[in-house]
Amino acid sequence: MADYDIRTLPAGDDLTEELAGWRRACALGFLGPEDDDGHLELWNRLRVADAMTLVGAYPEHPLPGLPPQVPVATYGAFTKTLNTGGHLEPIHLITDVTVRPTHRRRGLLRAMMTADLREAAAAGLPLAALTASEATIYGRFGFASATFRQAIELDTRRTGLPAPAASRVEIVDAGSAAPLLREAFGRFHAASRGSIDRPAYYDLHLTGRWDGQTRAPNPGVRVAVHYADDDRPDGHLVYTIDEKAATAVVRDLVAADPAVELALWHFVASIDLVRTVTCRSLGPASPLRWALADSRALTTTGCADFIWLRVLDVVRALEVRGWDAAGTVEFAVTDPLGHAAGSWRLDIGDDGAQVTPIASADLTISERALAAMYLGATDARVLAASGLITGPAGRVAELGRLFRTDIPAHCLTGF
Image 1 (cartoon, rainbow, N blue to C red):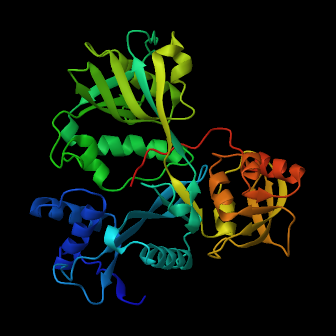
Image 2: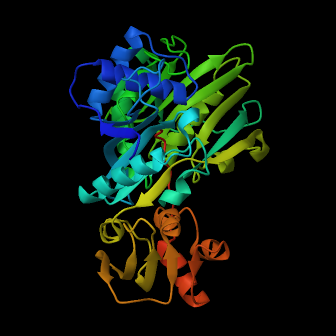
Image 3: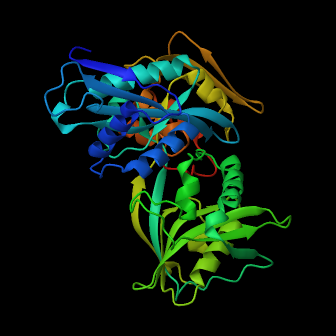
């Protein structure tokens, strides 16, 4: 675009001056301190491990004081997998999106985002996802909230959680726990609709070797692992202790099986001198509240959107989705960017879904509505009430029935 050179940075392993400048701009955009040499090297290793693509917007004629290697807008992307309901599908993940305050309202984000989504679609990726610092930005690009997370506080003096039978939970050495954590998460990821595979920095973050907020190792990180009958990890709990507040702070609790989850909750609620446990990502289908002797021992302290989704290829996205109901529905999708636009017939049977283009349909949904329904987080009738779906009430209800899931989507991966 005029006055700016928007370019993709080289993908090599070396930490170049241009890469350091991009990282400097990203830190400025997120109001954080600049990295020292050690943190730059660490960031670069993680970038390489995740095969991230980095894009920057550079003024064609930078003013004095603005180094030419430092962009005024940044954009990052990489590929992991999403559990679409029993199937792991490659997904395009977007991160580190910033625009310098002095260069907003100039179309930089739109130019980077539309080009990137176009390239992802051309590469055959049917879905894109991000986490949003600001909720007003990404709807205009077709993204919608698709998973949510609940923050809770648990009063350990009132839980009355029964001791799990024949359950094995062990505190392990945090510094060497990464392989165990990866294995436990792998079980959760394979079993949980909405789960996204984790970027490389999780190994460091969960084991206390590096903390993104303090920008230093965190020796207070503790790790407990739940072991299955075959002595392999099938769940884990990562936590710290705030001694002054007598609180255990759960950083990560992963379990594909409800019994394993309850065993980990029993463990953390039974730690001596701990009066409260906090967690910011209790699953929507967690059995914890119902297992408590006093359900009011658990207090919800917050609820927020987490993963925002965007459909790039309707046929592929719907055909790899897991379905909990059978039936047929026809609908049209409106999409200003064109990726999901069209009219479709969705047939769901015992062998999964088949999507066929059709000429037209009297049920119309926006690309945002399709994204919001994709993982089952929002009902079609709610979206119709909001104006994102239009059509006969009976067809809206049928659409909602087909997209409804038996178990809510749950994601434990930020990026």
